[in-house]
Length: 141
Image (cartoon, rainbow, N blue to C red):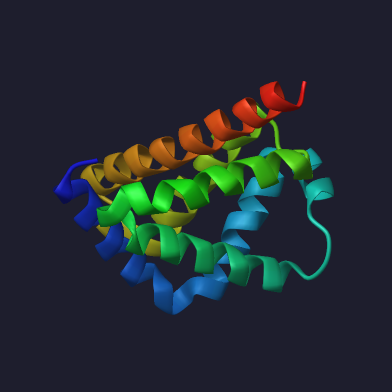
């Protein structure tokens, strides 16, 4: 991730923060529209789940400049998500729902450059989570 990509992601996330609850609701609606089977992975209050999502995104986005400090937490998250039943293919669906949500939330501010920056950041974090989940699976076998 380049400093420019980090800046674009951080600035755009700050622009979405005032509508965090709406953005989270849009995200989950889109996620379940893309893959209705994912709904079974979520239990409890979806508003609370949305708040957790936005909080963890906020921490991740705010820590992108200190990626070496962020990655251990991201790895743990990947292992935990595997335990919840998250599979490799789900990451692409989540990424698509995230980009769609950002596009809706940011409107014309969601430029090609911002989309590319978010894609880079998401790909980095998702691949780290997947690698950790796979390593944990291999270790357990």
